[in-house]
Each structure stands twice: as C-alpha cells, then as structure tokens.
Image (cartoon, rainbow, N blue to C red; front, top):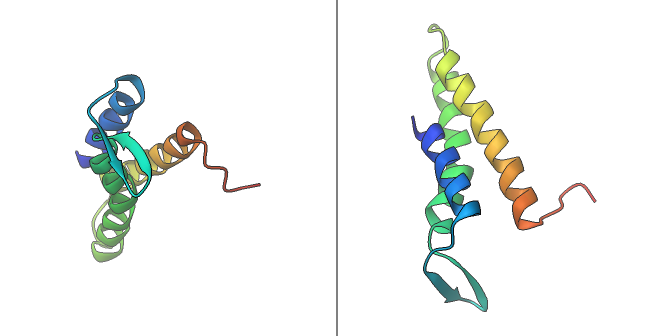
Amino acid sequence: MLSVLTVFLLLVAMIKSFFCIHLWGFSFDIIWIPTIVLVFWLPFLNIMEIVKNTEDYNILHWIGLLLNLFCMILMLRYLGIKLME
C-alpha cells in the first residue's frame, strides 16, 4: 500500500507545484521531502519483509519492490541525476 502511495506522491510532485522552501542553498517543493524519504526507505522495508518471511508467498512485497525501483528510476530521471555516466 505504501508503494502505491509513493507512486501517487511522485506523480503529483512531478505535475503540480507546491509551497517552496529554501534549505542549504537549494529550493524545492515541500512534497519532495516525504516522496524522497519513501522512495529510498521502502525498498529496504520490502527486502526486509521478503527475507524475514521466507515460508510465505511474498508476491505483494515483490510487486512493491518493483514499484519502488520504478519510482527511483523515474525520480532520478526527473531530477536530472545521471548515475550511469
């Protein structure tokens, strides 16, 4: 459920403009704070649940992990961060 919320927050952050804050010389919209925290925190949570519950069928956690990786790629491309060059 949190992975779906992260996808929604990321799409809203890309489309709409919200209240802008200035911090350490950077200016960004306020919606990017929870979005970045969720995008980089949730894959660890999903991996932990997959490793912890090995006897269960973890299809929802795998789908959530794939959604999180999709969000990471989408966010890095939107922000212009090139890790492969």
